[in-house]
Amino acid sequence: MSLKCLIYLVLISVGLLLLEVCLSEDEMQPREVNYKKFIGERHYVVPFKTRISQPFQEGQTIHGVGMIKPDAKRIDINFHKGASRNADLPLHLSIRFDEGKMVYNTYMGGIWSSNEQRLKNLFKPNTEMDIRIRIINKKYQIFANRVAAGTFEQRVPLDGVDHVSINGDLVSLRLFHYGGRVFPIPYTAVAEVVPGKRLDISLLPTDKHLKCVNGHFTNCIDADITVINERYSFQIFFNGVRFTTFAHRGSPDDIRTLEIDGECEIFSVTVNNAGGE
Image (cartoon, rainbow, N blue to C red; front, side):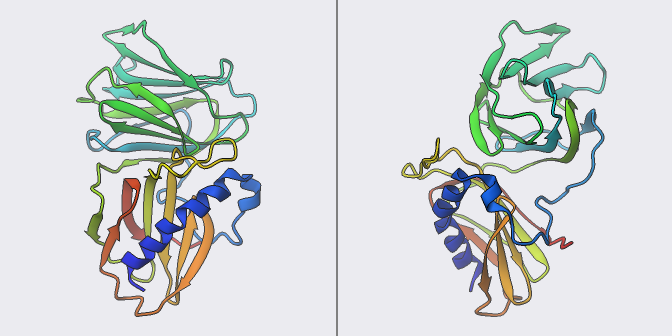
């Protein structure tokens, strides 16, 4: 089976997979845990602050995963222009459990803007936080545990942003990553996903017939699809949960190109070592 055909099968399955997401996550526990959920997982110290190696670009997603404290009140995420304590903040995102809101503001020239924008806080104390901030069309698109929470206007250009910080009421932080771009549909690329490699795709289904709000399908769920090439089969994971297996019908070493097509918006595509545990 070619990788192109395999991706078609995976995308066709997204509707069924999204239905499963509408069910309790407890009903979707993987049969076995052999691979890391995300590439780059490790233990980060909180408060966390890091210098980014390259400026943020249109279409990129800033992604953080951590465990929220049981008595959490606030978690703050900042984009810094400089390393100093009083550096400008083109983005200050405050997740406020005491208010039930996610609040966006900017801090420029030593002054907080009087214009705070607010969204409903979809995170809960004592649960995992998966937050994604996508930079697109001069907006910040916010995903909370893969659900589109809303957008904020990008008030200040991101030129000069060189640090990101995450602090507040987190027990732990196990992932910080940024990447992606604006992808064409259909998308074709060289992708030598030979045995021992994994293909990770993050995308947003855009089929208007898919709904999943309060038990019904919707197109607001960001999906992570992982394809791992083992010697005798492709292992397919959806949002970190093992979903199915496709036995090889041809040589597992003969994977050279990738094509993604269908009603979806691609956020990121990466090929890495499988990282079996």
